[in-house]
Image (cartoon, rainbow, N blue to C red):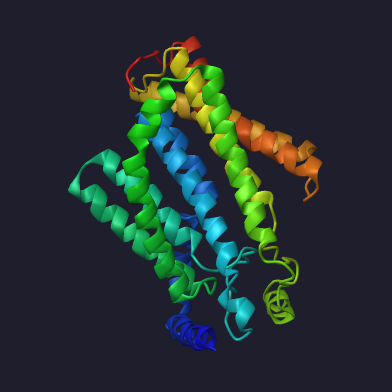
Length: 332
């Protein structure tokens, strides 16, 4: 009953916001795009390849950690999206996962907070805070999150960001003392642990079923986009990317690490070559690997996303060094 009161309040606020006019649609869609994985996939590698490898790695690992926690908490609450809850809400984009907390809001705090910390300028923090706010706001306007989802995302993102910053150096120093095989074993165990925890969270729901009303309302908005909030695919993708990024970085460190400095032309060429390689792996394997929730499909999904991460933090940089577009560096 309490949740119905909160949801109904949220519905009224969303409708009032949307009634302000469709002139807000384009800017809200733009800000929402800044919170999608595709945007992060375009930005994080350029930081690693062309500006600062350590900062780029931090961005990737922090973001994957946030993605994992967000998916876990979503299952814990297993709450609806606004347009699942009420067909009266106009949704401008389909979303298949549970509502609270907003992944866009949470990840924006972690990602742009990490970027602002790297920039180390007041204007960087101002821009980061504005982006966090408008990305969260966009999700309300687009009808895919209740205001409470966004508030929860911001809060969890801030707590996680602080925790990751506190743990980063102790964990990094501990890993550096291990052999390469041991490092890979630890990173793989962490990745598999993510998947296991996600599966356990899903299993803990027992006989709970997605309410028919949610399915029906979602189908009214997007008939060709069935909701699948209990899918393992997202968790596997996140864990695999985490493993690929971490294992690639550990190998690159053993081989001399990577210096992202260079001329503007070198930096741009690195990004172009790196992006082409990343796209080739991502879409090439997507074209030949099966899609589904069976073991083989999920295993191949893990391989695909792990290779993308490994390309970003190891294979790409090694090619840049080999072609004299970059130099190795022991500095981390």
